[in-house]
Length: 287
Image 1 (cartoon, rainbow, N blue to C red):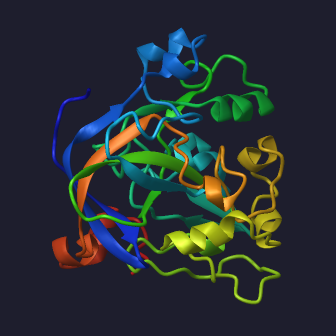
Image 2 (image 1 turned 90 degrees about the vertical axis):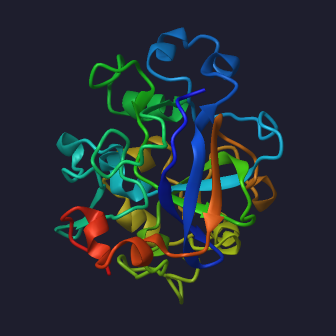
C-alpha cells in the first residue's frame, strides 16, 4: 500500500464533469508477479500493471474506466522527446498540425500528472509496442514493458459514496469522441464516414458501449503513423479495451490498480478556478 494522501481529480459521469475526492492513495493488488511471474525485474519499478485484473481483490469495488488518448501515439507517456508538451499532455499530429490533447491527468511524473496515480505501469501491450519499434531492452532506463502511466481521462457509471474503484483501461483511437475536459463535450477533429462523428462522445458509459463496436473511417485516418495502433493490429473500432471483445465484457478489470475516492458532482474546473484555463498550466485552453 502506498502512502495515503487526499487529492481531487476531474472525471466524467452521466455526461457531466465531476470531481473525484480521494480518501487514500491507490493500491495495486495482487502484485505484478501474480499475473506475470516471469517479470520479477519490473518489481523494482512498480507493482502496478495493465493486462489482467481481479475486480474482487478489494471488496465492494466498482468499475472506473481510464480513457487513454492512444490516437496521440507515444506522446501519451509525457516525454517531450516523444512529442508531449512540457506539462505532460499528449500531442496529436494531424494534417500538418500539432494539437495538444488536454486530459484529466497528464502522464505521471510530469507537471500535469495526478499525484494519486502510480508513476509507472507494466504492461505486455507496452512490450508489444516497443518490440514493434525494434526496442528489446526497454527505454529511458526502464525494463521492457514498463512506462510512465499515460495521460488519461476518467469515466464512471455509478456511485457517489466512498468505495474502491477497480480499473479498466480504454484505448481511444478516435479523436472525435474524446471529451473536452472542462465541458465534457466532444468536437470533430478528423473526417469520418459516420453521420454523427461525435455521437459516441465518451462522457457516459452507454457511449463507451457503442464505441467498442463502432467502426469509423476516422480511426485509420487519425492513426496512419501511430506505432501503438500499428502494433495492436490496426483496429478500426473507435476504442479498444484489452480483454473486452463484447459490451458484456466492458466491466471486466484489466488492471490491478484500485483507487479510493468519492464523487462530488461539482465541476472542479469551474469551482476551484476563477479561470478554468489556470488548470492547464499555460497550455492552450479549450474552454
